[in-house]
Image 1 (cartoon, helix red, strand yellow):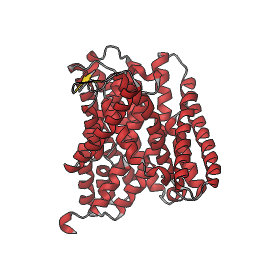
Image 2 (cartoon, one colour):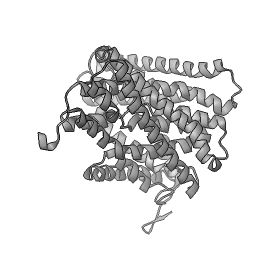
Image 3 (cartoon, rainbow, N blue to C red):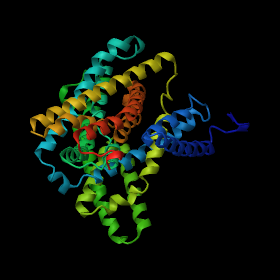
Image 4 (tube, one colour):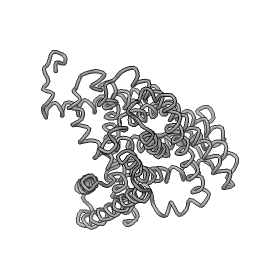
Length: 429
């Protein structure tokens, strides 16, 4: 390939290193540009990732991008999942109260149902002629997986808005409680429906219901066991490096990545195994030192992962107007269905649990952001060959929905908090 007058050997290790570096550079620039115009950094990562997409710019080849994707995606998923598990402390969860769990369940199930119905019935009616290779089982599987992914809320985006507005009160407390367990609910639901969906796609619906249900249950159980094993190994190992910060970081990072690798080798869930890993570590050790050890590299992981998501957008497909129409419309429908589900589900959960009026009317606005876990779960589909028939369209549609969501969700969250009277604008401080 010729670029700026230079010949780049696109099949070499050096080309892969060049691609890796380019993703980092474009991601950092994209994040800074996004912040300058008042958007979340993730929007910049995704958009600037698209700029270096092999199908858009031609700066790098598909092969080089795939090599980087194969390296970065499982590592990033492992780290993100470990940090999610490490944020779930039992003492915090016990203090949330039954009403919060009712609200969390309702605001999670409603978008799952809404997105599932939209993908399963409306998308084939509108776009079926553009997807002749999709049958009824394909739409069912895509609807189930997209619905599960739509449960997740982006804690970082929500907390950033709360901090900006210096919000305090019952709505703020409810928001913090819900987002604490929302992502965990999404991961478990995803693990359940992914196995069922895989059976739908690959068996043509000929497997028994028992077989369809038993496979994901076995995967969940063994993924949790794997995480438990690695947690106790890490707890034992770190007894010998208590005061050595660098060694602690390396030990934790190494164990997290190895756990993800073993999960992949055994056909288990990278996300669920590492989430269990982080959960057990933080609750067994009664402190967050083993979680904080890799929090410092979280930003680097996000830059790489989300820029890569944009850079691999439709990279395995022949891009044309019809394909862009399909992912654009599907992504937009996912946004509408998820927003409706989050708002309606949170209102219903708050109503049934007797929450204050300010919580009932405004909680939905604050739960609109989605990012990390949603993209992480979507990208994990690309690691599963059984989803090859739907993964490209589904992942690309979810990336489109995330970009749209990241443009509209923070202002909506800000509106809901201010409307409740719990936040302060710059003029009222």
